[in-house]
Length: 212
Image 1 (cartoon, rainbow, N blue to C red):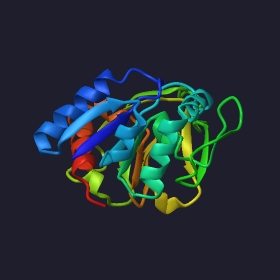
Image 2: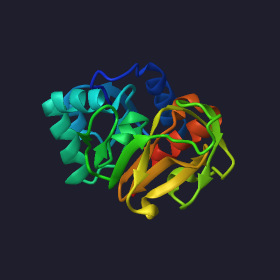
Image 3: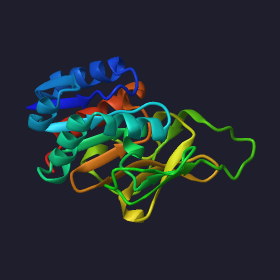
Image 4: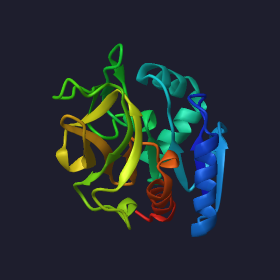
């Protein structure tokens, strides 16, 4: 089994690489590699798309690596490979992003990425730090994880899904803020599992052993 963490020059992947490699060893899930090689992505058994920064810049970088982008899309859309998006990598699964300018996403989960607007003006944006999950729909990535478990966020925009059934979990930050989306063989996490201690590692392990 091979898990490919896609490197499209959008963020430091060192901590994610170490967390995924650790959980692959603990769960017997095979090899984890960070790669910008389209051939490796094409033959990988599961894919991880991280992302740090602004939606338009990440989208441009991803599409700018055309061979890599095409291999990822084919693996997910045609081969049904399990896919995990993290932070902006999760937001890129949306139909459209509205950070700075309107930017098309991958369109894998219908919805828009919009600025967080807490009802309580005392709450600062970006939403930064620990917050507790409210799980809305059971999913294999939540095995051993419960509502109230804390994970770590750093973001100013969030995913407003079109179909409520595709929002698997949220957190409360002056109103509901999407934390996890998913459908079919795809799942996305707004928070950083590699920075979320035991809960994040458990979720990584769950993804690595998920057989959709």
